[in-house]
Image (cartoon, rainbow, N blue to C red):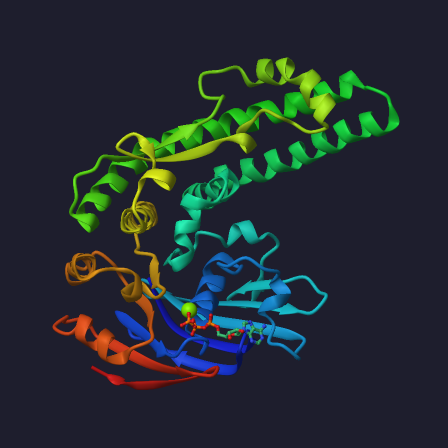
Length: 370
Ligand SMILES: Nc1ncnc2c1ncn2[C@@H]1O[C@H](COP(=O)(O)OP(=O)(O)OP(=O)(O)O)[C@@H](O)[C@H]1O
Ligand SMILES: [Mg+2]
């Protein structure tokens, strides 16, 4: 799968931009704040219909303007697919595929897969369980559309259940039957989500471990485990047991929305135990495994977006990564860096076609093919 071109209108710090890409390696070179990460985010939008970074959608509209548009053409085999994402201030976001509007964004997500490796990845280690759930839910959803539908349904019923619990407290009444109807709806979705998460990790962890050892060259034992009350338990029973507590706290206190994914190194939490370098290797290995499972499932390689990767890795790790590039582990790559000479030096000797773009205050131009 290739992204042949990209055009932007009033996207973040870009007024207008139009880029045609190399099928192998594309480098965005520029100073801090010039708009390199914004270009990766525009590509991310085409795949995921949303930004890779926190913030409101409207923040992607260039300051002082009232809409943005991101458009790109993918090539899958010999088929061309034009995807456009646009948002007008105060209106609903629109995503089209070959000019046809999607009814549901979920139909699009996962169709043109992308993997982003970014400086923010270590947040997955540092932040709370919600970040990790979001990350794995998004990954599993892209591999499995049924999971995505179940997740949407589960969240919908959970929201209803929580607002019912609130109503009980506010209005001093208790409609047990209604609560139990919602329990019955929640249970099958919850059990399926937990089962899928568990199954996914069985496949994912060995791949992750392989990448960790390759990228770090070190021998500490890394793993990640699924922390949940659910697999093997009766969710209906758990809800029943938690009912008093749920009523008191006015929210649902058991279920897959409380699960966590625990990152471990030699049996200890990576967050407290891993050095900065080990933490970086941990999340990069996570993303490389992410790439590998997506490539296997989709039968074509996701686009790989590498944000500031050379800044964050030592020479040994960069060499390992470049060996993977040389071995054609990846398909099309988009990377950012602040130094042209450093990029050229690292990519020197690769047989892939490389296109470099100079990014300067929201303007991009091709520097020239290598
Ligand atoms: N909606 C917006 N309107 C105008 N400018 C914006 C908008 N959103 C972000 N920007 C600006 O875009 C600029 C470029 O951001 P970007 O993160 O792409 O820089 P970068 O080249 O990746 O820099 P660094 O090397 O520091 O990572 C930032 O200065 C930011 O303030
Ligand atoms: Mg950046």
